[in-house]
Length: 351
Image 1: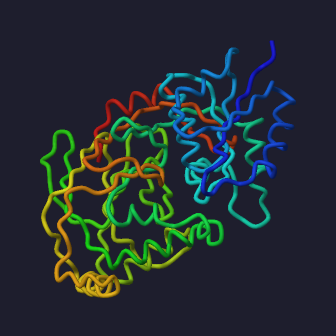
Image 2 (image 1 turned 45 degrees about the horizontal axis):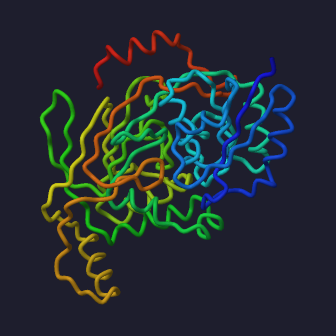
Image 3 (image 1 turned 45 degrees about the vertical axis):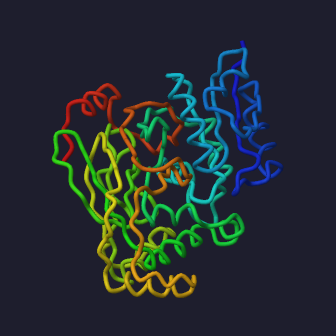
């Protein structure tokens, strides 16, 4: 019986690479080992519908695209509680999960497509965690606040022309936006309020704003809570270029905590502005023609997962330990027995 591989991709994604540039090469190489089916996703399609197009058992699911397409495929596998391995062909702007899985190298001499195909054929299946936000799976991060909104704002042309620098510009410009007061609630801890320009709950170490936590792992049964609260222009500049993948000296203004679950709500009070933020607000309202003397009180903000808008606050976030099987390059490695990882995820208290 021949083995079956399914390739899914989003043909209308804002950062999608023309399938003519990659699809033939992927199918040609996979046909050495698999019978290959190609499935372009459609508007309104749900993750669990991926498996409905096949009559034969699936041996490999290939997700080709950016983090949104990757999330879609991983959600399908997690919802089905399937052990089918998921291979990744990174074609987006950030490709954050693929970067953290070491699927390709970021240098001008590397061929990301060839690297990804080699992982499809020679990769080692390894289980990784996913996050869940209000019932939606995510593989990279959930976020809210002005800095999270900055990830949503660059247009297609800017992302094509400037890549990650498009996000850096958006991040820097958030200095003109007031922070938001959030209420954070975690199990067995007292809830607390905090003023922040961005809250991210990540599943990976490298989110583009530097290494958020040196101990972050994709298979440790924990998520990283990252609270960003810059006040000076230098803070915004550092974060912007860190997000672009560059190196800038200095310490980023963020706070990290290991968590398993978290509830995020907006507290409807007016946040306190730093001198820079107050100046930015006055300049922005003057240019808009509104001349509002005080910034408005927020009652809710946009919730985002893996760079896509996904409803609004409140947000309930939790870990889904070892939810999916992904193909990783042989040099990625975990160095741990999977049962041991599960035991740690369920028994170890967050720091």
